Length: 426
Image (cartoon, rainbow, N blue to C red):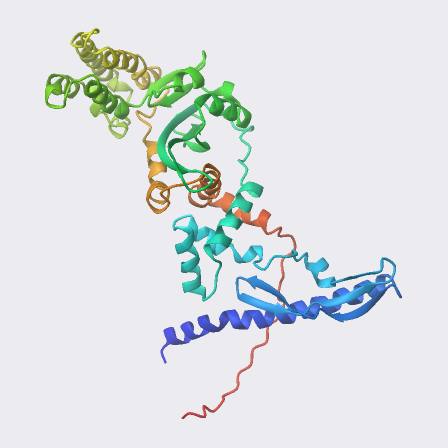
């Protein structure tokens, strides 16, 4: 036997050992609870044996069965279990709350079926997929509220969306809906934080939600891909807009294709885009520029503006109205990051890659492992996933609230003895 064999053997038996410890502690607490009732009200409480059937409780150590002691209350003429009251054991529930964290944590990355199977593989016991689903809905709806941002002074708002497949009550497909996210930052150089996500909601609804979560009047810049409804609902008079550079290039060629200009025929316009320095800038490169490079930046801005004018002049309004209108609007809101730097405020983000990166951490679970979701199921999963993946401190806070932790058990002494036992088979 090597050291790993010793460790694995103890690991296989630890649940059995802990169940015995748990039963002993429950018995001790039960005896103390009965004594406390009798001392507090002499003559009122009488022991009334134990329940005929043991109560089955699923814990993180596996299932235990315990015959709960009963006490008769002579004044109210009722029988109750002191340990149930003392430990606030929930009625009609086998799986205890503390037994669910491992499974809920797994299904952030795995399907409900595989999450339950993985817990059972590691521990030898665990909940079924239906139990995991039921607990996730309960936790998310009861404890997955958004934290308050009222004390924060956000200056920048970034929004974007992606398509997800939804299903109805009977499992039928409801088609694709938009899953939309919003990130906010307190200023240049400050991190963007997730402040909301929605499924199948329009931007007007999202505006109202954001106004209820933080001081919307403090916003100064909106970052977006310019999708329908964003500017009309999220942009207000005191805000400016920075369009995503990457989306501008991609969406322009998509609109040309929609208006009948196939990919090979787009060659002249692709060359004009290639000649525009804007679409090849990187924030990491721009951040290396100092105040002495102001003439270089001003020259670069002039080149970019000239490139846009050449592009717009080459787009006949009667032939490509959508593509021309889109590029004209994009041009108006694509150079705000230069204005900020020239005013000495620092470099703004050039695109919405931050949200795209956040999507990428969840997209495999949402679009491939779980191919179709109900709106309620996806929102509840997101409420826990954003805590588990993006804000671990909120994940810990959620479980402390859900488990209703107050006073923790503390072992003040532990005595371990050993005795050699002859193996009869040798």
